[in-house]
Image (cartoon, rainbow, N blue to C red):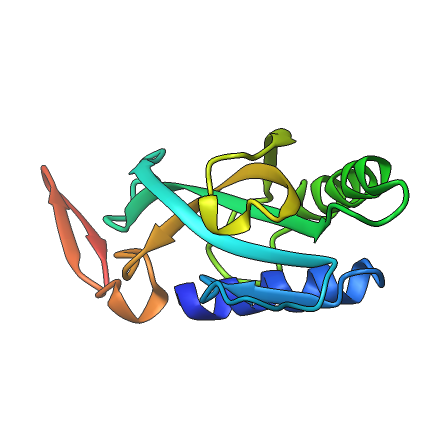
Amino acid sequence: MNLKDLHDKICTTLKKEISAIQTCEVYPAIRKELVAPAVFIELSSLEQGKDPGTEELALKARFEARIVIDSTIENAAIIVRTLAAEVARVVNKNTWNVENVSPGEFISGGGDDFRPELDAYLVWLIEWVHYLHVGESVWLEEKIKPHTINLGNINVGS
């Protein structure tokens, strides 16, 4: 599982599924001008996930999407909420066709006033999680070695 690929596929899918999105970036460098509506994607935290019993590291990955629009356009409040609902729809149950990524679980959405660099815009935040498995599974076929097991007087194996 490659985190860069996951981020890229999230952006690509959001732009494809929601035609109104003009800009989708991962960990964007905030600048003075951007083409909006825009969506900014970030992996905001990693927590212990559900152990798959494969010796892979199980992680619960929390993602954030900030939907950004010009606050001066007509119906800006409705537009940003509509786009936020669309982003929530796309991320929910989506695996982005990336191996070892569980279907997305939508958590919440709401106004986001915590980024001073975005104060000139109207911003809504959508949060969701994926469960990821990182590393190699010990149960890959090429890693299971044929072996002999002796049970009492019975010989089982190859």
